Image 1 (cartoon, rainbow over the protein chains, first blue to last red):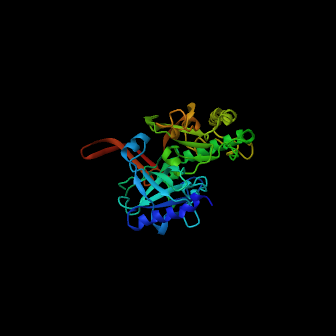
Image 2 (cartoon, rainbow over the protein chains, first blue to last red):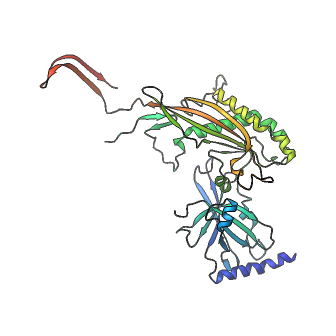
Image 3 (tube, each protein chain N blue to C red):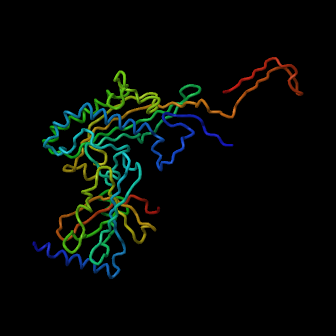
Length: 151
Length: 253
């Protein structure tokens, strides 16, 4: 087994430990939404919801993208960076297919719901803007808001 | 007691038929009909050549020239939420202002533009050479389909086999439809500050503008409470009509 793979459980546990101290106020869920009708939004929907967790079931790090990066990237206010998310390994982690929507079928939606301070009583919906997988120890999500933050 | 308008404009009739469906899609039937018609026509006319051409390309898994349909604009927000298959065909009412003008004494006319987007996925130089001409071919196919008012592969008369005109009354409800223009370029969701620069990911697309007119029309049973109308005309004074010169009674069935 490569060294990086051997270290993943350590990263997983360490990131979870930060959450144990209450330093991770946001919870992040991946929603795969399917529709029974012809087009997206037709018929009835069914959601498969999976929470992104680190060690001990604790949430990952969530940071609001600063204003400079928002302006440079043409991103809307409320854009979040989530991670680093520990890749899937023997002791836990998150699969790349879940985050990227690799197995999502045509017409299905891949959404993210973030719950926590300022996210409203039922959380706020986000779409995946980018996924960075260049580090073997953790992946980064950039999420773009869908719903109005005042809703 | 309140009564409905009892008028229609295009494919929308008031009073709106009641429905238990949790959607308002049926309020604009023209969009879905137009989308399905164009997709069917393109797949029928260009499907065989497409299947041969995509072998070994990045679109090899797309068995038809229209692999996915979207009844709305392909904005970046929509594309990021939804899993698309390519090529993607989109049909939607344009955000340009629609105009309403008096057509006859009893009819108004709504003139509105539509957008038809046909989008390929990013292609390398070799695939671009092999497949790019589908964009122009699709545009020409749409022009001819609209001129015909329908396509036999979508709906055909069972006796003659000729296409049924679905763009007019009983279908989309258009009084007229014409192709304004089309152009080749990048999909709108793939254009931003970064991707305008050299090296950005390019989704080649064909974008066509249509213009339709939809007329108002009164419903035959627009005034169900009126059974008879009596008219009396004559001379008189402030005390009333002295002598009936003309008397008319109309019965409405």
